[in-house]
Image (cartoon, rainbow over all chains, first blue to last red; front, side, top):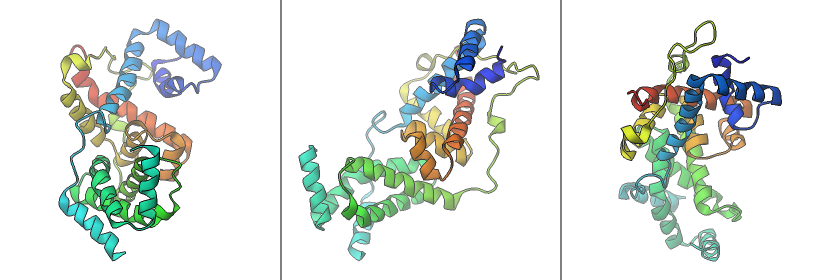
Length: 80
Length: 194
């Protein structure tokens, strides 16, 4: 029988399919008997999903780089 | 840009075409700056990283073989430049992540009982984005860089390990702790009973 702490430790391996069969069964058994750990698992997955909001393409399109930076990059190329 | 257009564009770069270089910089520098800003807290550092990334790209363009899109290639280069810059800015000694991780009783039960979340009911998209970015920013750098590489920039474990010069197991351990710590920082704002 897993403790809640062990359950939390195993979450990423469970989601990645990396848990050995016996631990995977123990993990799934814990899901069936521990609602708070189900909430923890759900919020862990939500944390990953919400991280995607910070990606390019998920928010407003990136602004153009400042002209001074563009000019500095092009000048660096001319200098070689 | 179609594959054929991109091949022609790369050939123009490789032949030293000034207009192609200007187009490359103008089209990609904004997105690259957005990436660098996620890693680097100071605007000057982010701009330096973008400039250094382009200088690296200009030097390496002759070896670009078109196996990847040029945007993907530039993305990897600016992430690497931002990591290098971060190394030079790293606060020493790094703070521990332990305070941000869940706390446990001796019997293995959590000290604070987890409850359900309702992110979209509680906050709009911009508020959520800001909350998550702030939570990531609170992580110690060695955890922040792993969660940025894996969950935000979408590098795989092996790529992240290579860029950071650590083992794949270390990437996995840090990523799990970073996600747990981020979950803890988001929890007070996102619980249904918040």
